Length: 341
Ligand SMILES: *Cc1c(COP(=O)(O)O)cnc(C)c1O
View 1 (cartoon, rainbow, N blue to C red):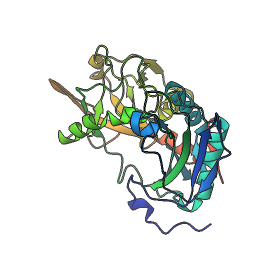
View 2: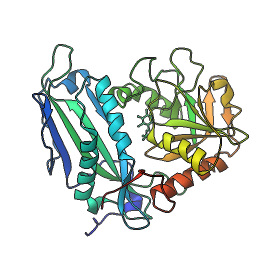
View 3: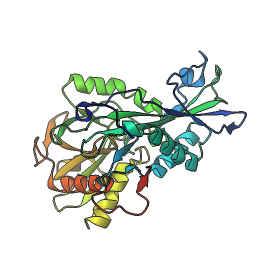
């Protein structure tokens, strides 16, 4: 298969239309058999549930080429399971999890020419999503839905090394207790736009959100979970029912404990103790881990010892181990790597 003629390393994180996408429709209580299509346009009723009441959820994962030249993706079964959880909370039908994984494989295979080569740092980003498609005007769930997956090649997240980010503690809340923070719903991102635009205007890369009830505990950013490292090398991640359960973060905690032999803790993390940590990082599919260099809040700032040029040593080890597993340089735990072709 001939690769597309693209300068992979200069790609950013944007949408590039690829050859094929996957579509399945839910109607009269069941999903159709689904298919690949060339048609990148979605035509909907002006009154579609998604357009009126934001009944939509999504997932995000990547396909890439390993050192051995295989096209793979990372733990797609967990994306499938998380999308089921999102669908349940939004009163949407579940797209069967085995079919989700099969559809991911099918659409990546059909776009294999768009999967960046090993060593380019670029990946094929995969976006599964679902939305209510029939007209809904009274506030209630739609009864017809569309599940789609498109792919788009994206460049290396860090061009020229992982630069630590500066974040600020947001005055806005991300997720209410018993709300929708734990699911990947489009609505969580719609409401985060004003806070992130505000943060950028003020010169920050990201927002740290605190728990909405007490504003004393660390939750996450708009699109990534936190990990912290204590001065004695324990990897700590916040526990809360309103945090989105990041697959990257769960994998990092596993790597820390079972591969690197580090102590790990998943527990409530008070903002007051953040100043005592040695390292901080943001975990998500896009960056794997972005090191946090500085946190600015009302009344002060916290500068982590590794400074604004380097990842802290433990963060770096976690990053290298997880990306090594993903790229086929380090043996993966059972079931983590899903070979596509
Ligand atoms: C998607 C997402 C993450 C990262 O999850 P991964 O599965 O690691 O990509 C973290 N926080 C939020 C709010 C998210 O939407």
